Length: 550
Image (cartoon, rainbow, N blue to C red; front, side):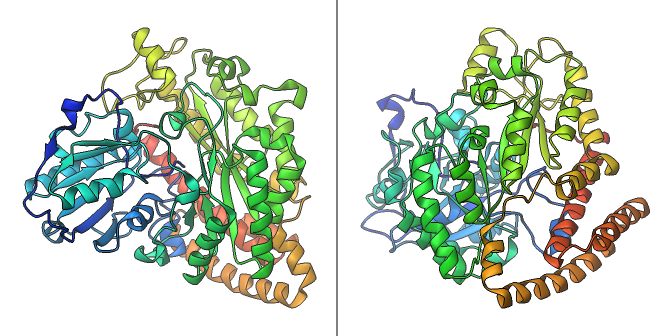
């Protein structure tokens, strides 16, 4: 999940395109009333949308952009943060603001345009950023008064100073990447944190690899840049005060600089020990994690419970095609072997998978299903290959004349496959999703992972802490028993389908009779709730609600 700082595109704008604009309300050191908006997401794999009503939350994770931009804003200005995923947008209030900023991920681009259109009709002064406008600068046209390219730790304060002086540029782009050691603690206090299931935390930016389809290096570069341990611990302090317990580390590649992150992890472990392990973490990494036993041990000691890995495909020819060389390392063992090394270390593996590479034919769909079953991976985000502007993939397919120009294609991707028809790709993708998340197949993967000995041979730091502090462990298990009872009641009240209720009931009974601890049972209940989310997602695909898998 990439960090959402204010961004836009194109490094091709000339000095003439940086013509200044004037607005009467600025000037003379004026105080700006600023609103920053994150648009709502469409229903997606990531969002766990159908789980939120069961757990009593409105959204999965807050975007990192809003509280960070608020922290970068000079104190004399007044900032309001609006996340449409947890609260509606009040356009009447926004009409009275001096500056309204809209930022978001690429999948939010259509909603961003709708919001900007409404704002312009009300005469609002609008600024726009986000990964999509970074790679497609002209996408919002005249709807944006100012756009931001790339990171904004320097350009956002610069723009606000220019605004106070009644002159600003139409386009801002930093000449150098942000120094992560100078990034302030985000203003989490300005968000409705009690409405989110997880908090978000960013430690690093950048990835050393060169996957053809990925836009991370376009925005953040290939040199991983990290915050200091002091910065990370300060952010944990601010989250702990807000009674946050689950944190998603949103780094696109948490282990991009292995030696540097080890130092941060050692300090996080000491922090967790000092405060009784208040946090459980989840993050994203590359498969070469399996090649570093010390790093995996530090991650489990820090209480990193799960990691999202871009596996992409079992087709090694496709991996080489897309320059995903870190996944093709037979000297270190095959992909399945390396996945199991991470699992045996005590870290659950979730993954991203892609269909539609040039080396894919009609056999890829069955191969994907078999790979995920053999890998004991319950949670796999499967998508069709999509060519993002400014990536090497986009450049290559443009040259080959194999891109659909439509912004929202009926096929769910802008790529024209080489060895599959577009109908075959779309229907094969839907078929894979349906097969993977049919209840028997899903729970086969879940139960083989949790009861088959593939996960848990390593111990999380909180488990070790609980053994040293038995009363803390007892208190935790009593609390989790109550959580499990409430969760079960909410799950069965929310799920109306008799077949699913029966399936979940049988699975839970097997877990109970296996003599598991309450903390395990509450986690197992969440896997049932996740299945309900996947079930509803696949239903939508079957009914033709196919959107871009970007």
